[in-house]
Image 1 (cartoon, rainbow, N blue to C red):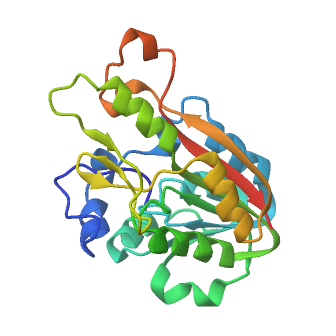
Image 2: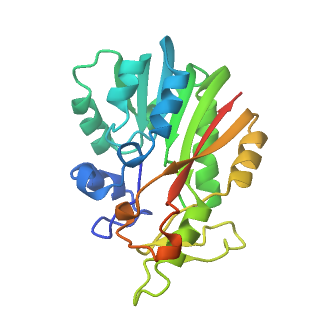
Length: 248
């Protein structure tokens, strides 16, 4: 479930959303992995890599990360809510025997506490607090004792930067308001509400789940990825996601 989607797809609240995205993922979905300017995500995966270790890609979408994970880890399992995305991911990794992809709703219980590491890349992005917290809970449940979480999520500071960069636009695409009293996200991009985090919020939420040694780093992207030409005073800054690594 990595990325943001243009308006041609069904609403993110719809059960058809990710099934529709599966057929044209490369064109419609922003890939954090491929647009990471400095290779921060790949570096974090290599730090966790072990030929004897297992990793789960929780919210794997169509399997953008799976081929690289299969080269770095001994056993790789992808979990995705969309059966259509699972089918595409299985085709993508058909030649890698150490990779299996599962429909999450039917497989998660049997894999609890089984993995040395879990990657969760832009899956905890639903605007409702109860749902993105549920994603973090589920990712944590897959880890064994002393397991490592590698989490990629949208950054609130980046959304504010993007909003500043297009402040003179006739029809701004990025709207940043305070979160609602019910915890719903106040960030909307292209009319799609998406949860964005501060580093302090991430450390607090993961700490409450029992994680320790929590480290947050920026995954920087180009301005062109967001189809924005920034004003000169902002051009040295770059939009970013948070990459958080943490251990139980």
